[in-house]
Image 1 (cartoon, rainbow, N blue to C red):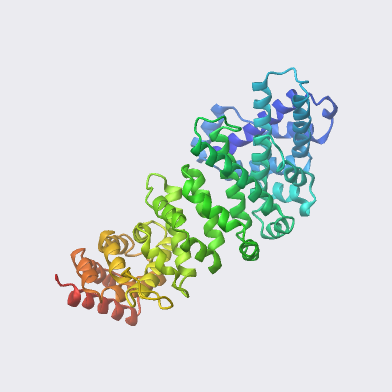
Image 2: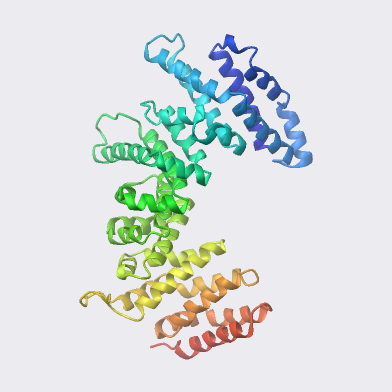
Length: 471
């Protein structure tokens, strides 16, 4: 259903743009031939409703048609033609030579920009338009990164984010300094946002909604560009991205922007201990991560924040900077909450992070390479775990994933419980939450567990029973 609506949108967009741009010279060219080919697929709303009711929404034929339409518009030069006409429209508008009302011109511009991005979401269309980095549409989008018009700028950034779905394209764009251009844009619009926060009554060069939209698009593109490992190393080595993004984090209040910002920082942290150290030593940024980790009403940011903490914790396992995660209130509880998300990958990340912190916190009270401090890491870690209801979370994790928990996750969970159940306070919390009883049922129900793993489970059960006594 949704796919067919996109087909219809493309049909209407092409028809409207052909009319409003008055492209008399292209009536016989491939674009118009392509337009009439698209029209063959346009169905009335009644027929769409009937067919989807018979065959279900998002039918394979819908997806195939949509894919074909996007590819055709890319191959036949339709997207480049739209770009050319948009630039002509902007020139006439800047010269005051437009007879149309401003609102009408804005509507045409928006429809044209939407069309470009929808076509770029098609894999074949994206590859066609990139054309090894010399495609006309790709080069036009790079040029639009310098545009003062926020709609063209946002379209260019979204387009770059789509081109960045391919690793080798990401490498080439990094070499061509596209990453740096995106950081420039983020720096400018982040400054706009900060000025609005400090001087809410002052004149605004752009509207707050525009600032958020551009930041959201830029951060999504930055994140995509640094998915490939070599690009992470380049971004970390240049040393500009991490400080800029971390300094912005405490001041972000739009949860959509926060989600993309946390995701971009997480990609930077991945495999880069130096970036993880920068996060750990930036108390304001770390507090902001913890704050978003508890913003349950905003699922995107609330899910991304603890993953960032977990990935940072993994990178800090060879240094003493892990202590900052224990020091900042809310970090431990964010990781505990991640234990009961529905994705086993995220559950495992939380377990591993808490295990690494447990190993360090429960074995020493101050970092080894520093003079003793007044901060009791063991006491704080235990207190935060209990305050976060670690026992209840572990019980929920076991009972809701009894049959489907991957063995790797089960093994890591048992390692965490083995370490922490030796502490009387934590063992008592586990006993109160009936973790030991859940473990017994878990062991009995899993026929795929080895004898060694079952022996480990029984050992943890015994440890909880022996140590879980009220003090």
